[in-house]
Image 1 (cartoon, helix red, strand yellow):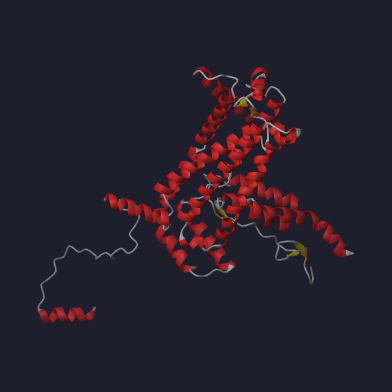
Image 2 (cartoon, each protein chain N blue to C red; image 1 turned 30 degrees about the vertical axis):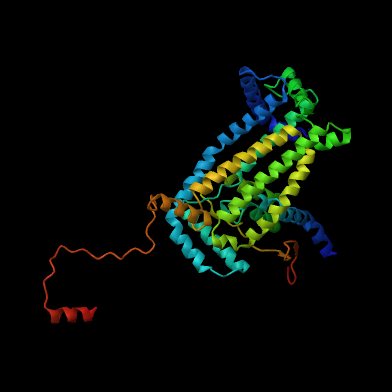
Length: 102
Length: 322
């Protein structure tokens, strides 16, 4: 029962993960490496959504894209880590309930 | 377009797009072109591209400036690249990217453009799409493109038969005119060729050997061959007028890229070697301005004190001490 609830809770962000993975595989390479930050904006958004869900993650992604312009200094800019990670990632990037004490 | 939210956002951009289009149309008419001819409207679209791309030049110049400054950090960049030489696992790649980005930030030499130039062009593209779409129905635009001009734009044909608002698929379904399909097909070929050439130039000539070994490069190379498919699909669905915008923009990029690769190549790339060879041939190889020599001779501390002459034996002893 609990795992079903978790799966439903995680469904939106996993859909977003799928979307972003698709974007990163197909559209992003069309114009090559242009991001002034590491990780790139799409990678940053992906991580943010994985950790914090669609709403907060997307907002962080939008804020990041707004910060990424030719006059920005760029550099390393990671997603601030969550204090207590609740979930695990599959190799593809899907978010699943973590085993053990969760 | 039936998306009110998008229309609201695009309204100001549409207004500006229309203004530029109408201004160019006025200019072409003023110098004697037929105001209702398709060619006049195509040239107006070309003019729109010129204005948009010229407006993006400052961003581009900034990119070149930081690329020039990159010569100064070339030794440090090389150090990072040497450190990760031959390490192709994901973690080393990641660590290398991190260090490189950090170096760019520290020295203010970030050569990457960010996606802003692209993001800025997208609404312009959609606006033009929407303006043409409305013109097709003979509707007036949101501003400078009044009802009369809108109808003229909508009715404008190339060679008297191919309307600018028509799409390949539309002509296909209506069973003609075949000229629309021919022009659309020709533009797909030209677009593919120009994009292919631009990409190939960057990938073959303007990347350092290290970048060529990265997985990103291989991915890019695969996409080089998928890209024509993208153009075929969009070439089928987009109105001729929008395709003219895209094609002209592509040609501009191609020329711009050519100049940059020729004159400001990425250090360590083949284009950089070619440039050095070219300059050496002309006999005016400029000393790499501002770039500190990689192996500078350690400076001998200067003293004002006169060196006492020493006899052979003592000189030997001093030499031994060192």
